[in-house]
Length: 324
Ligand SMILES: [Zn+2]
Ligand SMILES: [Zn+2]
Picture (cartoon, rainbow, N blue to C red):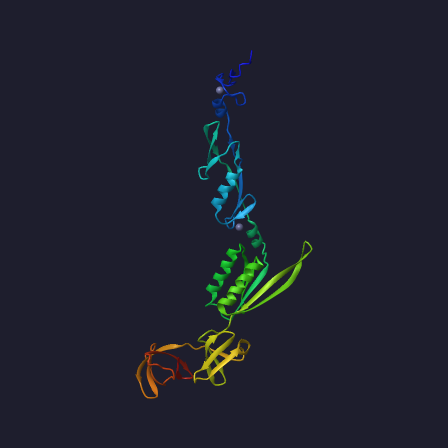
């Protein structure tokens, strides 16, 4: 007689069944079985900057997304799992299928958080820097916001930091955690302000048989821009354009173009341009009125005056000059 293959019984409920799973009918097996589990999730949070260390790496952006991915990867599963992770509630709902039966399991999600310093913040705290960015100009007040904007953007983009900022008589020094960021910031400042840039490196030691260099970027902003004035002899020149050479024009119409280095020979004069209204035109001159103090003057008619009602003037040695 052939053995009666169909005559098997569940060790749990005693029910007769076609197929056994670990000695059990499918219902008992599913009831007794978890299918999914999740270990305690360890993460570290930087107490300085709030970065998260997830699976050995520090993240400052898209933290929730990274965390979800990491948790999902940590689920131990015997069958495919469609996971619904709820960090706030501290639970994961896993859905799957076994032997044609839908499986749904609610797993408690336990997270262990440690508050430490991230790699970046601990370097910063230790005063670490790879490069010094020296911004040079006698008075940086006007440019400050733009300069710091550039530096902070590069620092952010390259995931580094400023470990120290030092005000000096000749400008400001920034001690920066990454050479690349310092180089990028220096380049952008150079381009934005038409500044002069110099790089130097100094050997600071050895590491793993390699020489370690620290870079210094010096960006010198021109002490002049368009509309600044310089004196040479008895002549007052106004800067018209700043490029490789500085183009200038004197109040009496003499043009001059000099290289940057030559600018040092000229004396800067603090003069502000003002606006004036043209009141009346004469054959060889104009009656004008200073818009700030309403004083009226008679001035020589500028060669290229085209009948415009408003002109720019400067006051120099008790005289009023029209500049175009
Ligand atoms: Zn059973
Ligand atoms: Zn940090």
